[in-house]
Image (cartoon, rainbow, N blue to C red; front, side, top):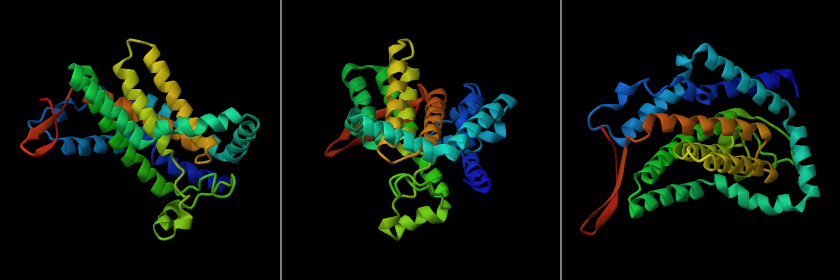
Length: 286
């Protein structure tokens, strides 16, 4: 792989490096006044948080930049070696049938619908058993999933990276032009590899749950372990390269931690029934 291409890929990654460690720079006290506005609405607050995410590099400390450089370095190294790494994964998978047997199930842990289901289960559990912590967890999960979806789609559109399944393990980056072809030609549905959407979703979910229930070390251990397995399954399912998975995990962790710090205990999410109408009220505590 030519150095020029590698540098181009790293430049694309840099566009997203702001999300990598914003959870380190945005302390609980930072911007606290922004969330004490009377009658602050769900979507208004969502837009505020998105603004904080994308502008986070402007608030980086020296330590934050060191973290970012390290993450970019690791991701760049993976990109340069993704094809050979993928070949090793597939060689191991071909020799061990259990990998192919488990992979389709594990990959569901990063599916958006499955994670929405997990969110719903937390909310229902909290509503039925009057467990405020469970309901709060559901609220934080909902916000983290929304942020993850926005970030990952912007990343995919900018990168336009080909999935491994497209040409049997050949890595290609077409940039935005490659991704947008998918809207014109169904044959170009493979240019959306970077970063991994399943991985960012799994890690955002795992991070919120791990932080909410961190008093029992089993919960964080299981949460992050399952998220890791979900990410690895994206490689064995021929959907992603290792760098897609690694960077998706970093983003998912950062988003989950950001939401936990900024919104924990500040949501108001409750069902309503009025005549023949029903739905969900979403807002924030003052």
